Structure formats: structure tokens, C-alpha cells
Image 1 (cartoon, rainbow, N blue to C red):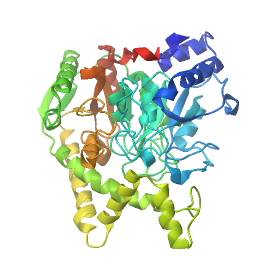
Image 2: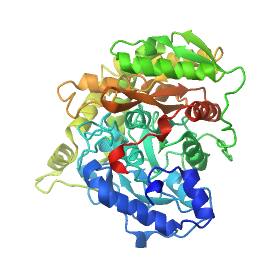
Image 3: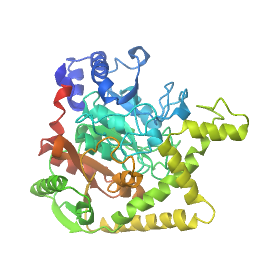
Amino acid sequence: MKELAFASIKTIREKIQKRELSPREYVDFCIKRFETFDSTILSALEIFKPETFNNIERTEGPLGGIPGLIKDNICQKNRSLTCASKILAGFVSPYDATAVRKLKNGGAIPLGRANCDEFAMGASGETSAFQKTKNPWDQTRVPGGSSSGSAAAVAAGLVPWALGSETGGSVRQPAALCGIVGSKPTYGLVSRYGLVAYGSSLDQIGVCTRTVHDNALVLGIIAGMDDKDSTALPQKGPHDYVSGLTGTIRPGLKIGVVTNALYAEGMGNEIKNRLQDALRKLEELGAELIELTLPAMDYGAAVYFMISRAEAASNLARFDGVRYGYRAPDAENLRDMYELTRGKGFGREVRRRILLGNYVLSAGHADQYYASACAVRRLMRAQFLETFKKVDLLFLPTSPAGAFKFDAFADNPLQMDLQDYFTAPSNLVGMPAVSVPCGFVENNLPVGFQLAGPDCSEALIFQTAYAYEQATEWHAKHPDWLV
């Protein structure tokens, strides 16, 4: 059974269909791996008991019998939902998120709740109120965030897929730091119904897997219109991103190499070398590489900072101890209840972002900060659209270095915020991007690159990423101690 630990969904499905493996056997295998290894990695907040699964023996559907993890800010019916925060202690979701419902309809088994940065606010996995997930490649280092548990569990071979969420890179960045594939779809391609809001105009559910094929498969299942989400794109589907995975690059494909990202200040030589290796491989496979400058990259971090904090302050106003979750027991009046509940219920990073967001939205500052950021955001999208008239896809780093040590930026929150420098622009402009492993840097730490495209170009991104993946060995690597 050990060979199943890092097997792809495709391989596992073939074994189930040939009756070489039953869904119950595979679920038990995954649960056993959590019991064996997750006391070290701490990727899951909860693994559900097998007797609570309704479809554990189901084999039909594209994910029939295949378990995975759901980030703890995505609703699962009759399961706890905390967003890794004390303020939602005791809350049980009364319904499934649309993405979860679609996965279940496709035969998938949500095995548990993945740890994450509190309310998805963080780039390292260090802000969870309950535990700090560790990078499977080096337990002294972060897995990235905010989808820390989702990425770490897949990288550790505990499950073959996991859902995360993205506001500024929270699937792609941990995927790169953990050596797996992470996707951020076009805004509106996947319903946000049942995703606890952080930044409503930025948030999207994304997918963590070990291979491009598996990522394309899972995303195709959860994509599509939803009457419960007014921002969902009116695309009924089916969304087939798998049939185009031929192992070859589309003839005449033009990839724009964003030089002001590739040669950005602070990029280590090791990761620059890995990115150059990836570019050479893409060129060998037939892509035409065109160097270009994208000034929008230089504005992305500041614009993301303003908009995300403002939307966070608005969205998290509902968590006040009145209707659900934690309520401070020692409050003497209503004002005390609000202040003590939010002060004790939210962690430091969430409180910091709420305060900054309220400042950005405050009288006398809203035009100076929030309105200006929204205007620049529109200009950024226009610049991306103009760029995609010249090239088909963009090549970007995912992260400026490999995984960093815990507490590396404890005294430098600005540097922590800049971990989203290469990823946040795609969220701001609403366009898709996928991070793919491209090798290792010093201390045997994995790194990745991004392929980004215009609206609804997921099929082309996956086709290109798959061709690269099949021509390299990085997707087959995993930490030796987890075998």
C-alpha cells in the first residue's frame, strides 16, 4: 500500500475501477497516514470518523472514492467551521459550499478540515489560532499560507487533493513552497457560496494537487455557474480541462516573460537559476518566449494591501458575539461584549488587518486610499488585457525564495505582506494562474513558477503546464521520511 502515498488521482482511480483497491481501503489508508504523520506536520484541524461518510463505497464519478481535505474556511454541512479562529469556536455549518457539494456529487470524500491562517489572513500558516502547520520538506520552515494545511497535506502524501482559497496567492504560494501544483481560477469560475469572505472582490476557491492532470480534473468538477453566487460567471459547462492535456505545447504559443518580476530585487540566485531552467525547457517544448515589462506588477502589493484590508474590515464586522461563535463571558454591557469578544476572539494579525481596513475606509481617507487603489486596479486590469493581445500566457515566479523559517518575519510585517508580491496581481485583475514545481534551491527546498493567462484561459494554462511537467521530474519528488 505504500506506493499509494504519493500516487496521483488518475492512478488511484484506475486501481479502484479495476477493483484492485476499494474506496474504503483507500480512505482507511489515508486516515492511517494522518495518524502516523500529521502529529508532526499538523496539516488537519480534524479528520472525520469514517462512519460519518455517506458515500464511502461509491465508485462512480470522476472522483469516486477519492478523499481529500477542505480548507477550514469552506463550509461542510454538519461539520465544524472555524476559519482557524477562536471567534468561531463551536460553530457548525448548516450547509455545504457549492464547491463541496459538486465534489461530493462527483464521488469525492471530504476527509477533514485543513488548517489555515486565521480567516485566510497570512502568507505562512503561522496565524492559525490552533496550530502551526509545518513544511513537509523541513519542519523548521513554514509551508506558506494561507492554505497551509491544504498544501502540506498533499505534499506529504496524506491525501491526493485539497481545496484552498485565494485572496492574494494563498493557494499558489504554499503550493510552490511545498513542491506541488496550485491553481487560482478566473474570478467567478468557481462559486464563492459557502466560502467565508475575506476580500469579496478577490477571493476564489483553488485546488492543491501533486500533478497538473489532477488539478485540471478537480477544478473542472467545481467550476461552473451558481445561482447562489451573484459573481459567478454564467458558464454552465461542462468544464473539461483534462482532454487537452496532450503533453505538447500548442503550436505558436507565445509566453511573455515578465522581466521586472523575474529580476526583481531580493530574488536569490538559486531560484533565478531554477526559473531560467524552466524557461529553457518551455522553449525546447516549442514555446516562443517574449521578454516584456509589466509595470502593473510594481503596484500590485500596495493596491492589494489597501483593497484586501478594506474588504476584510467590512466582511469581518459580522463576527461580534451576537449570533454565533465565541462570546466574551465577562462583558457587563453590549459595548463590552463587542470589544471583548472581538479583542479576545480574533488573533493579532486579523485585528491588525481590520484596524488598517477601517483606517483605509475612514472619513477623510477613503478617497485617498481605497478609491485610489480601486482606480489603479482598473488600470492594472487594462494593462494585463493589453499585454494578452501580444502574448498568450505570462511566466512569473511564484515566490522570491524557498520556504522561510518560522518567525522569520515576526518583527517585519511589511516583509511578510510582500510574500504575495508575485501572486496578488492575478487576484486583483481576476485572471487565472497556476503554480508548477520547477526544482529545488538551497537546503533542498522546492520552488515553483506561475503560468498566468487572460480570463477563462485555464485550459491553455493546464495544457502548457502539463507539457512542462511531463518533460521534467519535479512532480515525482517527495520528502523521503514520509514514505
